[in-house]
Amino acid sequence: MGILTDEMKHLVRQQRLGYVATISPDGTPNLSPKGSLTVWGDSHLAFADIESPHTIRNLTSNPATEINVVDPFVRKGYRFRGRGSVHRSGDTYWKILETYKSEGADIRRVRTVAVVEVTHVAPLVSPVYSLNLSEDEVRRLWEEYHVKSIQKTILDLIPPSDF
Picture 1 (cartoon, rainbow, N blue to C red):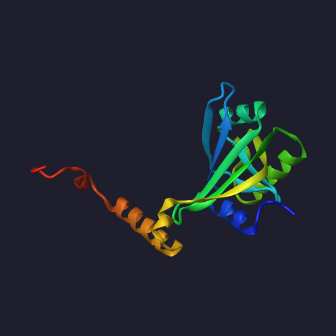
Picture 2 (picture 1 turned 180 degrees about the vertical axis):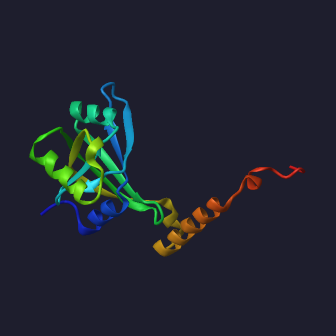
Picture 3 (picture 1 turned 90 degrees about the vertical axis):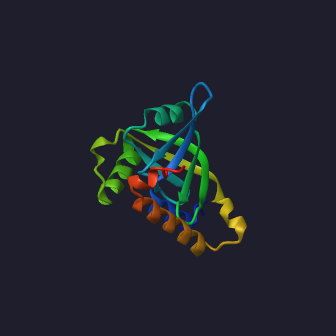
């Protein structure tokens, strides 16, 4: 049995955006958003290398990685830790490309694909829940915040004359 639950798989497929952390050759961290994140079986995640030279270089030299996926409205998600492998050709590469293509993705810019064998999963939960708010309340607050921020105009940014 795999490490990824149906709930985790649903979140990854729904959000598609994951933040992939790798370690650079000099030991510094590298964090990169990946909008192509998907589930690959019961214990693996995958993403396409479109413009990810640093992430791919880092995974090639040090496969340790962590991927964070969060639903921005309910402020919950997961940390997926594991080991990545890079595929430039071969069966896995072509099967993942075919999956992306069947989902409507333009695969012409995909250079390589990375597959992460997930070895540990931990929940990610915002501290806002320490206020004893429900998911619905948190969602409502963030949706309201985003609607209000979109409605702001340049006049909202100009301080009053008596400021």
